[in-house]
Image (cartoon, rainbow, N blue to C red; front, side):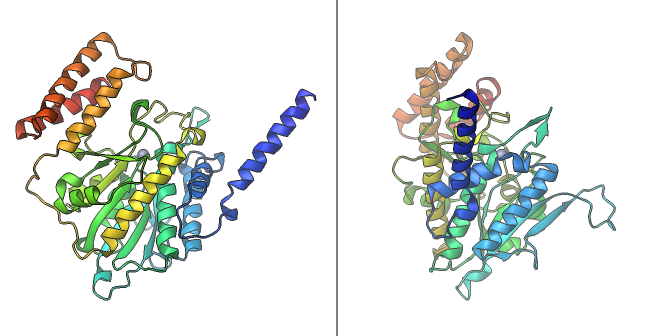
Length: 391
Ligand SMILES: [Zn+2]
């Protein structure tokens, strides 16, 4: 066979596999399917959407609105799924002048009283666009989060058991541009902010933190609400997935949970963490762990069920909760694996010494079986230092 023939064959084969992933082929179903999650990621990270910024971002927003509509969800803003984000410098009379737009859908609750309350699930769809002639596909950041959002939205829209509380599904724009989409949403919500009982945010759900945390998803935010901490403990992740709790203050404001935390809305933030393709053109869909994305989506869906239907809702607690030993264990697992697997994450001698010191103090805390306030402030300082120098 000639090389040209082989090339043609390869092109045809890949065209076929692309067709099998085509969303239009996917059947509507309340089940969360790995293949559909994969199809969403491939589609969102495809050249069609040019890295989901500018004209490609606008195209992606139309695509998401069409998917929400297909699920039978209601538009959040009158007859529109779109929430345009105006430029602060725009002429107020110029209605077409906006920086981007959020895409938001609603599933009304079925309980006559509780339907006034709402629970939000959100994930940003924008990414870095095209730079220096190269498309940044943003498969992990954040096509994975949007894929989860769409599958969970589809599940609730098609399931016979309707949620007692109203659910809002939001895909934000301009996260990469200073969290502008979520900030605008939080100041212009489609339903009263006082009735928002919990906000769940996902950003990057398909990789492994610095290549050493394969089975882990990090969950941040449970430190502000006893009820959320209990829920995260009670609702077990599917087997093969480990949920590692962390305080959001360890990483600062890194994603769309920021505007909700600032308004004291109980929140959870899910992420599998940073990796070597982060914000690079190599953040490609063939590097995603789809089994893991599927397990995380199932877990978030279970948590949403509880938040939608439980009698008790989370409350924001301004007094600090007792520090969480699980957080110490999570950080210790990360630093131990980095030390144990130098091929996966090489460290200079100086950095190794620093990380070894951190590991030994974390071990002392775990052995002691409780975290003091002093331990916690050491951890906060150490996490910031490690983020700045090692990770
Ligand atoms: Zn992101």
